[in-house]
Length: 300
Image (cartoon, rainbow, N blue to C red; front, side):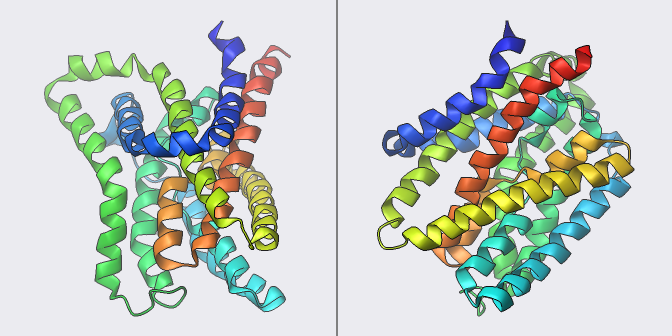
């Protein structure tokens, strides 16, 4: 029954998030609590002390740094529009989604690789993004360490606490850890709920900002679609080379839209957050199709 329902959970969350954005935006504050629960269940299901960065993770990290800057300057040169260029920048530099393991493992990715880059990728952005925003965006006068601590605090609030709790449970209360690990399947439905609330909040923002900005929003939506297709394709290409196609595509393409939208609002033109709002829709539509197709592929 669950296998039949899962492919339709994400599209339903997207439709409800768009249709009821005005009301969902009011309760979106509970999203960090949901992400915390997802991460705790995920971290408990992996022996954290055994995790090591893989060559695939290093390639994805290099991609985020190099392509985000290259994409920014390329679009700026071609269009002379800093909003479009900043949209490309944040669409690539945005850290990997904290809940990336949920769909990745459903599709057969190696859990250890996905969990490892969830931590490494977010910490990478916390380190690199302040340097990038010191030369690009509206906060170029902000000191590096101030910017670094702001981003680190935003990321670690949700990421570090479940990681530390899981480490302590695995070290001192392994039976409790194993009990929580058995409930990791719930993460999928928690993620759908978090997606519903996040989309409600972001679509509410777009609804408030669209007046007079229709053309630029359309272009940002197109950019987000191109980035989504490219990052899934390139990530799968790299993943295939290193023996984990699914992990490569998901780790490169799934983005922490909540953190990305926050960074866009603080460091860049606020409209650039539209890229991540639409990006979340494209990503989850594609993942819904993958969840539908994967069981059928396995039967062949």
